[in-house]
Length: 386
Image (cartoon, rainbow, N blue to C red; front, side, top):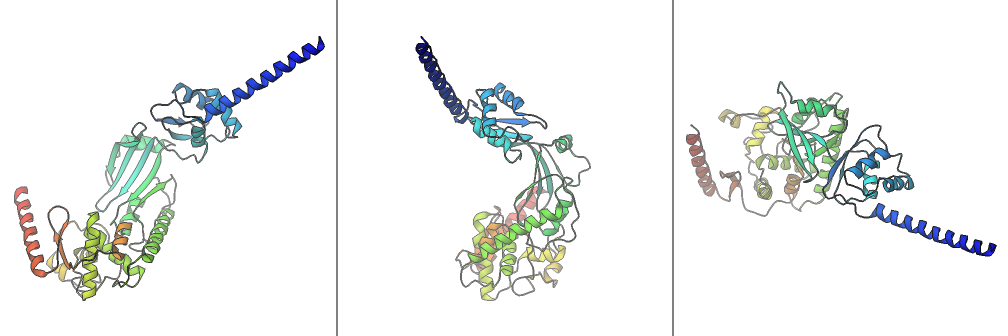
C-alpha cells in the first residue's frame, strides 16, 4: 500500500515538474516572441510609476498578451527596478523583452514631443513637433521665428513637459557668430559664451540637447565634430591640389558652401576655384566680398554695391590674390569633401542659370553669353513682379 502511494506521489511530482517546466518554456516563448501590437504606439511612463502599472497599461493597449508574464520577465532579468520615466516608441510586433529593454535602458524618450531649434542662414526658427507612431514621422504643431513678441502656447506647454526632447539643427553655410547668437536665444540652455569660435570650426549638424545644457559645452561639441571631419577629409585629399593645409581646405570649402546649395554642383564649383588657383587667377566670388562687409555678423540683405566690389578688404577676392585669410562660413561635410576631390573640368567661370543652379564656362566669351542669359531672366522676373 505504502509503495503504491509513494509510486503515485512520485508520478504526480514528475508530472507536476513536467507541467511546470512546460509552463516556464511557454512563458519564455511568450516573453521573447513577436507581440500582438498591430500599430506602433507611444508609451508614456510617468515619474513614480512601476512595472505593475506599466504592464497593465500595455495589456490594455493590446501591446502585450499578458501583464503577468511581462512582470515576471522584468523580475527574472533584474530590470523591474530599472524603469525609466519618459515617452517610448513601442513598434508593431515588439516582444515583451524588447519593450522592457526600451523602457529600462537609457531613459531617453524615443517618441512624443520634440522642440527643434533650426539655425539657418537667414533666420532662426523654433518648431514644436509630435511623433506620429503610426507613420514614424514628426508632425509640426507650432512654429515661430526668433524675435517674435509672442510664442505659441504649445511651446510653453511642451517646455513644461519633462518628456519633451530638444535638439538644435545648424544649417550648412551659417557663420559662427550666427550660431552663437542663436544659442543665446534658446531658453532651454544656460551659461555664457565668452567668445565666438573661429569661423568654419562649427560642424553643421543636428545635436541633441537637454534642458540646462551649457551653451559653451554645446559649442565645444560642434567644434569637436568639425575637427574630426577636417582631419578625416584632409587625409583623403587628392594629390597636387593648390591647397597646402587643412586650414586652406576649410577656407575653400566655406566658399564652395556659400556659392551653391545644389548637391551635384559642389564638385564643379570646386573645380572652378581649383582651376583659378592653379592658373593664378583671382577667385572673384561675391560671398567673400559680402563677408568682408558683414564680418559674418548677420545677412547683408541687399545686393553688393560697385564700391564694395572695389573696396580692399582681406576677404575681397576681386582685389586679393588667392584665398582669403579665414573661412567665410561653416561648411558641411559635402563641401569639405568637394574641396579635396573636385571634378576634373576646364571650367573657370560660372553664373546663375535661373533654375537655382549655375551655368559653367571654360572661356570668357562663353561666360559672357551665360551672363547675358541670366540678366534676361532677371529682367523678366523684375518686370513680372512690378
